[in-house]
Image 1 (cartoon, helix red, strand yellow):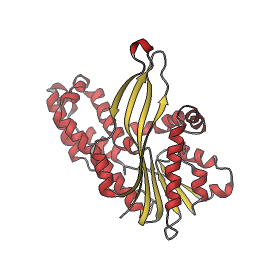
Image 2: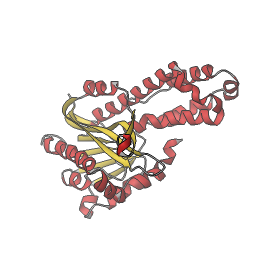
Image 3: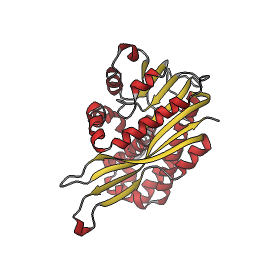
Image 4: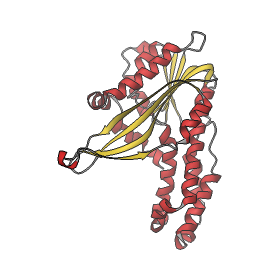
Length: 308
């Protein structure tokens, strides 16, 4: 499953070395991310819990962990990658700050990849491979619609209504994209000749979109349930990716190709779940273009919200 590769992938894309790269090539990304989280701390009512939970914390590359720890009785960092969490905690400059940080290893989907994998395993792959592509993608569309999405996901040792501030840090699109990539990997391994058919199969594309929205809603409900009434939520999410390369001025400058990462209904779901206090958008570069490959970047939306 794709989630099994998270620790090795994160080792290349997170941590202090990556932060230094971003400070040079995408400083506004670090600045905007930290500013929204610290604005939430500033707006947090004294009557609320001083506990802060960060979902998808990883190595806290974009998260101002030291400042959050100084403003909290406890900061709970939640991620599937234990090594990245330990790295984030080890970067703190004082043992007293590290003592305020609790690390929690957990799957923010509540085991969705395993639920989907079990259903994929039970399919009659030989029969589907021999048949028409439409029959395979019809079956996979039905499988996605029937697959339960824990809503909200239950994460052990993470109590509900216990925090004054809950943060989701650039993890949302991974929660649905990894299971969907697992599905495509299964087709590649067992019925590769039908793989290209998914782009033209309307029923499958609609089912995949419904699946994304169910996962998004479950994550929003998790954030909502973690904070006390009147608590604050910060949600950072990549919403669009883009590839680009620099061409000569004679060819019109940079060439850019964009790809949406979340359904448009995501924005409505956020407004239906929370009362928005602030909304910000920015772009950041994750890779520079090379001679043989394009550069890559993302558009981010950042929300500061309260729970009605």
